[in-house]
Length: 179
Image (cartoon, rainbow, N blue to C red; front, top):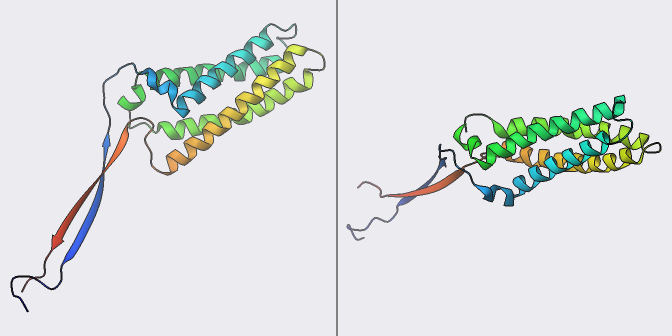
């Protein structure tokens, strides 16, 4: 046996992940081309369109109309503010806040709220056409909020960041046996 070269050695590979976030507030319109950005834009649009349909109807002050408008405006403002937070990387600046869990809970609740509000509007559509159109936008919003909740659930469960990135880094070390 050659004394200069060991017969066995051990290789250990360790993977570490570093989290990269930039704490500066900056405008980044590229967020609107991502799936979460497109979903937020669709949510804002459906909320606003449904609200307008109910508001222009003659029975906008009915309990059904009031409930639909409450759901629509609640969703419009919360989702709109979140969209601005993502566009200006405020979510990334405050990365310690569990944004994905907050969004998951909100989207789940709004999916249920829209199921109820759009169903009530659809039932009232036999009297007013505007309620039928609002119900359509409400059901569309329900689907988009539900899909967004599903995405947020899986992202939060996998430990993903709401904004920013995890960068994996592999380090390998070779250990030779001592003689």
